[in-house]
Length: 252
Image (cartoon, rainbow, N blue to C red; front, side):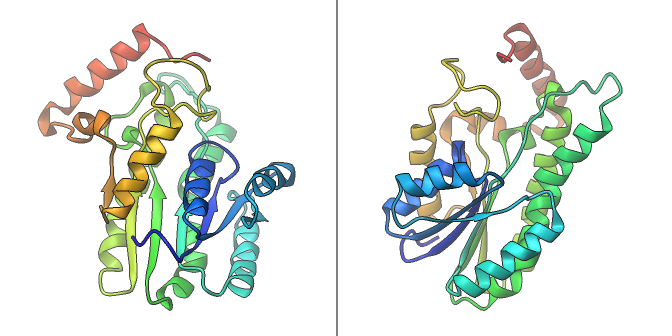
């Protein structure tokens, strides 16, 4: 994607990867609009980044998505980049009954949200001479973390959706790129000093380089082997990965 002279809308832009991307694009001179549910957090980020704009959005509410899309099209007619970043990651246990409310929230936020948000803006984006949709999935789309089975499944589904979406938009002005983060040191799980978590600033730097290189899928080097999930040997890879995570659990 081109890295300058864009009008960019980022869901979940008040913290973690979303805020990191928002600030990186803002520093390049793009018009960035962040979205989130809490006005206080939106105000905090925009105050720290003069010129950045914000809009309140509940990505789990179809009516809120439609209202936000109408506002964006009216107030920012040059909008040409959508970054579907908002997501939640509760832990679960697929060997037991999973709480239905939690399950629905994960699916609604992580899968329905990006699909609905893109659907609300897609015709506008197709009218732009150069547009990009960026879907934030996860390395867990390829190698699931068993203690976040529903989250991992939603990211696998969004990866699949991105592949179909890219194909269907192949003859339009809209490109589809996918970011597949590793474990990044953000509040999505628990921010701390675990050495297995990639520093946020390093992740943003590598990701921005991947976006600039026009890669369809941006995977940082440290997880390339996991992305290259070895086909028929997948089961052994997933078992080994999860056995190591159980032996050295993520801090709660």
